[in-house]
Length: 365
Ligand code: UD1
Image (cartoon, rainbow, N blue to C red; front, side, top):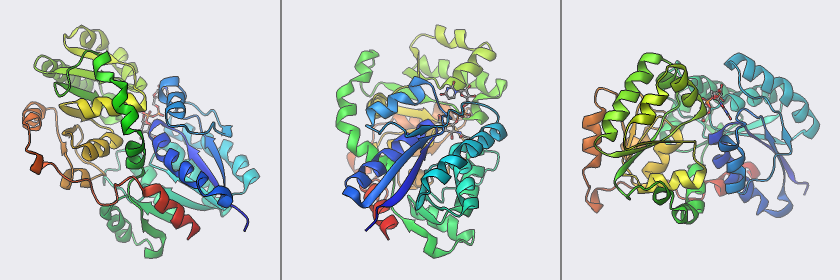
């Protein structure tokens, strides 16, 4: 039988850990699949891209579209223009896209117009907040994709409510957790907290990069003040996304944060260091989607600085709580109360390290 031709797309940091287990699972099927990997170049810094290829043992991309940064319209349009000839040349049986970044939506649009079947991994998540660029990307991608591979029951329900045909929906579980299960021993061996002089269970790990938090000077000033206050009580390590660093500099907040004792600002971390800090932290404060899931799997308290989440199972079944700057201190106190082992939540169903195998089955169908 001729191999099934699959074109994978990655663009931004959270894509890399989703594609790695899928490419590995397909490679394990011998000549059943012919795979190609396109990097749109949405993320291009060493710390935002290359380090993940090395750590996750991702193959080098066959093509890099080198799109880089720009406005949403510009970035989306550039990905579309540069992706179209690549798609036409390879003519895959499936385009496989993951997550909710601009590259995901842009490549889906190109494929849908050319009649190439699209499989979307992490389909069906909804924050119901159209002010969030990722929500637009999710809605558009799911409306167009032929196969909607969902991580959890709430995602299936969201898709059904949007009138999507049941036959397009397949619940496969969470591929991020495949990568976590695969990399946990390596992450533990990194000792990232030790290198930073942090005692296990005695620090808060922070990542913040959403436009709603960091693009507004008033919000970012309040966040900075709040972090300095938290650091006066518990050590804080803040891995600063390039967008956040730029805004901190623009709003003249960087030096103030750098001066706060017990607040360590570090560059964006590689995958294993980030998992290591997550597991060893007393709590995580974030606005990232991936960290909400990883903390849930690891049983680490997570405070998500957002008014909503597209990942509600991390609250209903996991360790995640939404927080605001007004309630952060009280929420942190509550999160830091040691919990009995029996109280620790279970990972959601199908967050078991085998989602990629189920994706392979769905494609072979
Ligand atoms: C993107 C995703 C977001 C994801 C995040 C993870 C969209 C709409 N957003 O947001 O869902 O959570 O990636 O990081 O796709 N920059 C660099 N170097 C890089 C990449 C970006 O310096 O390698 C800076 C640039 O100033 C750029 C800014 O970060 O303008 C924003 O980058 P962009 O890719 O537009 O969005 P993210 O905020 O990273």
